[in-house]
Image (cartoon, rainbow, N blue to C red; front, side):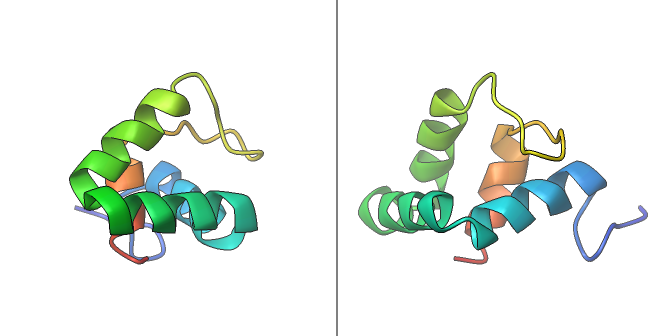
Length: 72
């Protein structure tokens, strides 16, 4: 399977990029992960960001968010 910048796809890389570099998203992700663990934090974020996309157009989905939270 080909990867993109070490991630499974461009979408996964872009979601991780935004979560890890946008202060508000990062603090939210960090706090949720600390409080609930990575799986539940990813479910909460996926639910809240259901119809949202990154400014670059990548869709926030559970798999991409879950993988991004591993870096936090």
